[in-house]
Amino acid sequence: MNKLRFAKLEKGFQSNNRFHNVPALILTVGGCNLKCINNGKLCEYAFPNLNKISVNEAKKFVNSNKSINHIVIQGGEPLLYKEDLERFLNDIWRDGMFITIHTNGTLPILNPLSNKYRISLYIVNLGDKNLPEAGAKINNPMNNREYVFGTSEVESMNTLDIDKLRNLCLYSADYLLCFSAEPDKLETFSSSIAKEICNTNDEFLDNFMKTHSPYSHIAYRPRNTKEIKKVQELCLETGKYYCDYNENI
Image 1 (cartoon, helix red, strand yellow):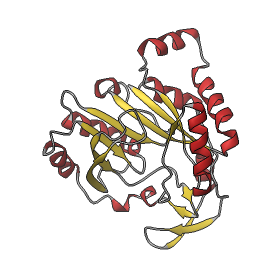
Image 2 (cartoon, one colour; image 1 turned 180 degrees about the vertical axis):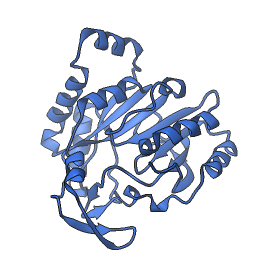
Image 3 (tube, rainbow, N blue to C red; image 1 turned 90 degrees about the horizontal axis):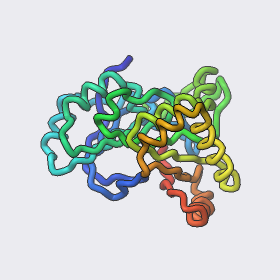
Image 4 (cartoon, helix red, strand yellow; image 1 turned 180 degrees about the horizontal axis):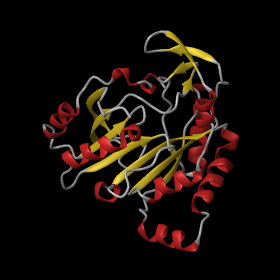
């Protein structure tokens, strides 16, 4: 397992959750277990090559900005570095801190420490994707060479594990499930997944309802620029959160 390092440290604003536009320290990691494609490009943060910043440098960055209590850890896939990330959070934790982790929803949460950290999850890998076939080649933005997809990678990109999603939701303080699909299928698709997450035994459901935050939401995200207007209109009709389209990933 690769050790935790960071690709970028910056001051910015929370987005796409209940802390929208709140000042935050944004820590970005490179490296991901998926290789997502958008507009014919691989996500540049799918690769760990950008991770040049040490954990100690990241700690200094957080500790030198104590007026900002919101920490966003994004990537890439932060939970790829689960054990090191737990140690890092232990070291920077202070009372009043809020932590948001952006995750693709395929890896386990920081359990049981997540309750201590009041982690807010932004789960984004939910919906129809423009998936390659095994053996497909696409340009790697990190070195301008062809990246060849393997069978296991394509399968993992196409798999939605309800048990993992359920546990991610249960062990986070609150969460935002971000769905992307054809606009006319978004509402049905997201509703079916949400029902599956809660479709379990009565004991689980009772515990889920007692411990869960009222700030958990479903959001819709367009898959491309052509769908932006339709998805925005759908969010206005249904009251769902709208997640900005990012053409860089």
